[in-house]
Length: 260
Image (cartoon, rainbow, N blue to C red; front, side, top):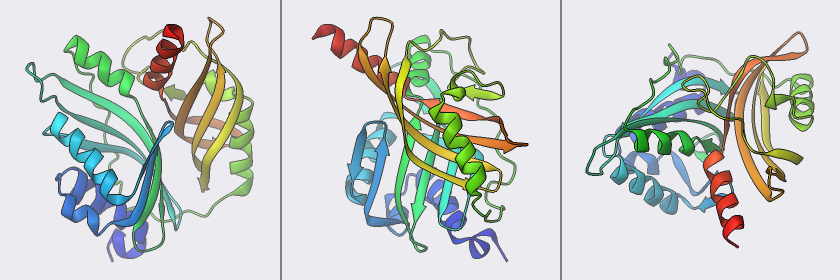
């Protein structure tokens, strides 16, 4: 019995990555997404399957050979989260090659995918397009579509909720933020004053989450930072994981505030 038969949401996700995204086949996506499919990326929300597919098509036009490599999959019976890297060459004159990571949390009604909340590291993409030097792509997960559903664990989820609200994630050892395993970057100019956990689910010892934090930068400007991540809990502690922060949106908001 294949993975799709064992766990429908993993089968849906496998087809979404292989048949739709990596094949650039919008027709395949129509059988995988509900008509009212909604994608939230940072502060923006795209409502409806057709609007979503149009947005993805624009990205395919910007990066004609765009592909996706999956690094981690976390799944329950009706939720699934991926850590992934998108990569390709720009359609621009210089054909600059770039790759950028993201974390996405999906929902399913058992037949199709109904929605997603995600954060992608567009700041890393912009850096590479500007420099002309692409980062190395991290190793893929060896068997992303062969896992089994894991039960939720309320205790693990509660621990991660507390970890996020206490902002322990900012300086936690074992957690890789954004592209810091590729370059040495400056610390993020942001101090959160309030953290809202907008989505979270546990699957065994792993937890996927999306947060919206309100805070201030060093100039005292009020800004918002969305983040998404997948972490592992062991012996009552968060031990490792990947967190992607919407640094590009944070930078844009700061610049708008500075010009006002």
